[in-house]
Length: 294
Ligand code: C5P
Image: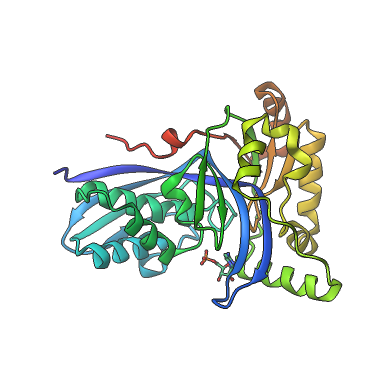
């Protein structure tokens, strides 16, 4: 058995995010198409007598407040496993709507399963993942995937040809809970009808063609709420479109605004406009998102 394992934890964006009603458990019923992207944290797991987490990045919670720690503790309890030391090298901006904390948690789950040679436990791993957060189960699937329920009812979709991306990460951070609450209140006030569910079949059709041809359908219900709190986010989205992006939208509950370009050259020409707040990225395949490093 290996002494340690290195797991790249890839971030995600949401091609679309539709929010439906509030459920009895306090979460919202939603529908999304998740997409793994090339930006990643590096999670190194080593066998250890005590659970430990090393991460020197600013703004990242330490100890039991970190989702990676929670995931390790949950894996130890669920499978009666020994502890691990987690070394976390952060590159994904924290609380930016890119699923950084969730990706780290899923990397710990996959990594511990590999390190301690757990066999064929996909359902139990998915359960542990959901106990950490609504979008953690996606990171066990990776690539392009349709999700419903809280975000855990997943249908893997075929890989897309790689799409060049530019991520603009504003300094402001957005609370996911507040964004969902704001949407609920806004709908109550305006009596706006809930969006209709697309379903995994329609999502498959949408992603099997050139996804950017469907740009007008790729909308995020949380955008209007978050843009009302931070009006300059809407300006960033507009600037991405003006820079040549075919599609631009907020990822998850923000704050990251993503631009997708039909050509790498168009994306590269746009970078200058955004200075240091821009991160160059691209969509990646399922296999790439689930790789380990030796
Ligand atoms: O599951 P997670 O802890 O990531 O969710 C963070 C917050 O986002 C929840 O506490 C809830 O307020 C909101 N949320 C929701 N419905 C979902 C997912 C998240 O209301 N399906």
